[in-house]
Image (cartoon, rainbow, N blue to C red; front, side, top):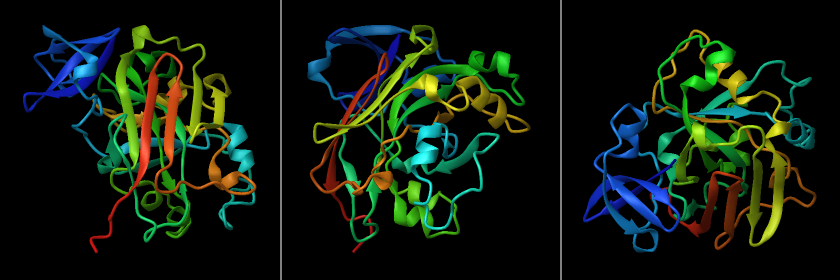
Length: 282
């Protein structure tokens, strides 16, 4: 099942996407993730509505996993401006990004060159927690996942390096993380392999399989939840593969007008245009 968010007559509604139509629900996707029943109402054509981010109500920051594809870890060696780890991490690397980063699958990506000159793309698979849990065993971890989405963890590399090696600031500028296009429930996802891709202006820059992940979806949940409660509605990003702009030679960074397409097989596609935006309040 694919759950999307749309606004109809000024009211945000959840909906079930089926082909070229969407069946509206009485509750939002945020409500359904937290246990509200799926009550179907009228059917409208997808062409007549605009898909928004499936989720709008966040319990906290978006939870993220870094360095979860070894090819990405290795491609950035020597390019982290003195912040390279001495070896591959033995356990998942976690960080967070602010929820105000989240935008919809077709919304503009905010771009303010006065804040950063190094805007980078990162195609990712995102998980959404559907059942609360703490210290969740790995073998039961996927029982706590409601579904999966496509995300792009757009990052500002110079900000990422400028604050003591902590990634929060360089990952948290407003309106920079596309999410969607819908939330695909776990029972509708082939977890054996998903293709993760990112194109910029029609050029394929990232192309990998989820089988290349260093730590599986279940391992991420088990490790993250150890002693820490995960709650229904939490969003967990699972890392990006190789091909990021900062690691290329020459480097490739996003600029005003660039069209970024992020897709994951079985989950859908995001299409966002980088758009000059005043984020500094000038």
